Length: 492
Image (cartoon, rainbow, N blue to C red):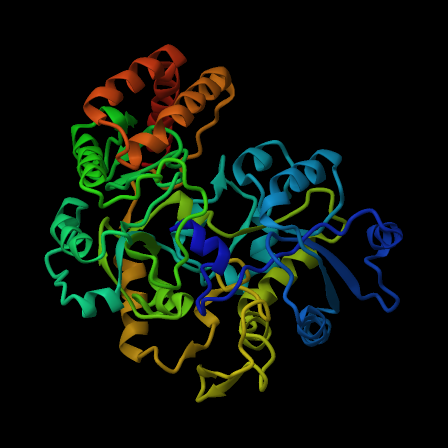
């Protein structure tokens, strides 16, 4: 799920993750802080992003900066921070008050609340109006904090849906019918058993330590915490502990039954390496898809082999999706206006964005018609940037295999997907910080074994909930519900 998307960048082309990182404290930093590194009034913008540097970075940026300079008289200084170093690095950057210009958002809500990011409410309307008018309302609502906007989000997968994804090779090899798999884990039990009988040494349901079972919830603080809201509570959403919900208990029981039947790897609760998307070490896995994945197209591209998926949850517009890929402007930046102007260009200039996401035109791809492309032999991993955290996916050229009907379905699904009843809700944890720490510590002891089915939920869930009570979960839920009620009231 999350693993392949970090590795492959949620890219609309299965691309590797773009990273833009700290510019450090070199001698050039002082120059850039004063005049943007300019000798002709050209501003050099300092950027941070997470990920790995493309192998052909210099060539990509030579082309990109030429166009950026022509359009807005600026260039971009891009360096990189890896996923493993990102949290530590950005925490230090923000704590130091460094005057960077643009960054992929790090801990967006708390750092915006602390004043680390510039208020873009007015700047975005003045310098990025063209792009902001293209964004669905959910991106604005999902990113506003106390009525102010501190980010310019990437228009990508506006909704997300959990899917059960199957290796097509094994479906064909053993003539396994997945037509009855729909909307629940339990519906996949029989096909998993069929596969396990044929291939007992290959993971039927390939999951590891980080796996969190899914249901039709939204999660105010993500799946690591026990808090959830059921999606049918549209007018009066209630905070629940999902480990007290009978419906989620059924899910955990299914996981335990699968584990006992050998359908889940015996080391699932401790396995941190996972199962590569490519290759044949797995039969079924859980993946996240959105509208710009065009069904299984992007997943299949990333795997390098045919995959087919069945829905597990509803298509949902949520705060998490709205904040999936935010760009912020540092509050200490001396080039706030130019930074926003650049973000507008990046998200509206098709030539600029496609050249970054697909690579060098003529070497890695070629245009076919007005808005489609063909990938060439030069299109390789690590030689381009990713779509999901670079720019507006709606102006990316689509591969030849993507039909007009698929594009129409994409647009209709964005319009019609379910909206979370808590879209835009931002929980302020100040009053329950100690309890929050206690709760996550408890979850860290129980979550992996319960969600992977390694232990019996009928015995261990009651133990978990007793520990959560001692940790102060009621205080957190009461505070969260209080803030949610105020949010709902103010939104009506």
